[in-house]
Image (cartoon, rainbow, N blue to C red; front, side, top):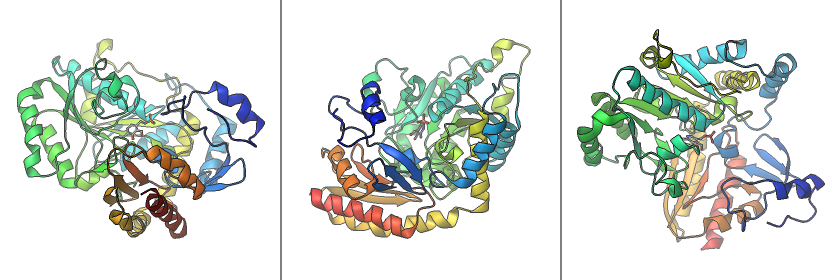
Amino acid sequence: MTEPSDTPTWYGRGLPHVWLPYCQMKVAPPPLPVVRTHGCRIVLADGRELIDGIASWWSVCHGYNHPYIREAVERQLATMPHVMFGGLAHEPALTLASRLSAMAPPGLSRVFFTDSGSIAVEVALKMTLQYWLNKGRTRKTRFLCFSDGYHGDTLGAMAVSDPARSMHKAFREVVPRHFVVDVPSGAASFADVDRILDEHAHEIAAMIVEPLVQGAGGMRFHSPEALSGLHRLAKDHDLLFIADEIATGFWRTGYRFACESAGARPDILCVGKALTGGTLTMGATLAAEHVFEAFLSDDWDAALMHGPTFMANPLACAAANASLDLFEREPKEGRVRRIEARLREGLEPCRRLPGVVDVRVRGAIGVVQLAEGGDVYALRPRFVEQGVWIRPFKDVVYLMPPLVIDDAELEILTGAIRRVLEEAR
Ligand SMILES: Cc1ncc(COP(=O)(O)O)c(C=O)c1O
């Protein structure tokens, strides 16, 4: 990695000491030095401003550095930046727990706070396994999960992600093996799920699904009918239903939670990313009361033994409460519908470009699917030259912008995709 010229001194001093995410450090281009963020903009050290098309890994829903969230965090910083959550409770966490439980699909009465999305998934898996253990169902130790699924980078989360096609495929022999099936696309395609459940439901603890949109596994969409069919099968076969809404929650798909599109009532729901408006790291695992009750016992061994040091961090809770205020004050349904329409108009022309095999849009997510085999990583610097921050991966170029993005900025983003793909053909 060689650094760009004219860079700040902190950059040259620090770069040789960091190990960067999701990249081959031998050949990856150096990261761009950033000095500031505001609204939908990322400001680089050389003064260039990029319009962010992916909202910092889909988290910055209200735009960067929102004054309302910043002020809430600053107020919290002045009184109590952190305190442990074991044996102590504080107002920002309890307020947030009651608000999340009130806004989530019905029945999710208990909130377990975590420090990231992957850990929210780990907690969901652990809760599920122990739920069955506590009920004496000791054979229910496996999960039903989906091809192209992605649930995080920790070992348990990797094990329920697609084992063959994901970026974690190197680990497939060392993580526990679960049942993996394609997300059904029509009535006939439920046959595989049916077969697995008929044969193995007695050993399956839960089904885990990313509702409506599978994100980091390839930006694949499925219908509310497929989702409600899966939910019904999980219930019919005595499985818990875990909805991983870390990417889809908080109006990203046009619904507050994507599960609502199918009337699905998860037993466990994971949230993260946009929970704090993308300001601070936080996740949460919401459980239905019947899940919680399975842990109530005179036997300490039946308790959930989990408690990350920074769980329910007051600064993160303050940011999340402020983010929920903003969602209440400025309803997002209309905005997401508008973004959806603009993404459709702006990306649809890509369909006729060579190498493009599909264009799809759902809520504030727009995807241009390329034929397999191209080098999408080579496109990344071309987008920066166009003044936008867009990071294609696998075989997709996609947009998941802040939900506050305006039409002019959206046109710049979609125009950049049209131009870069046109030039690349
Ligand atoms: C559906 C889903 N689950 C879990 C995660 C992991 O979240 P985090 O990166 O906060 O650990 C992600 C992150 O992209 C995700 O999209």
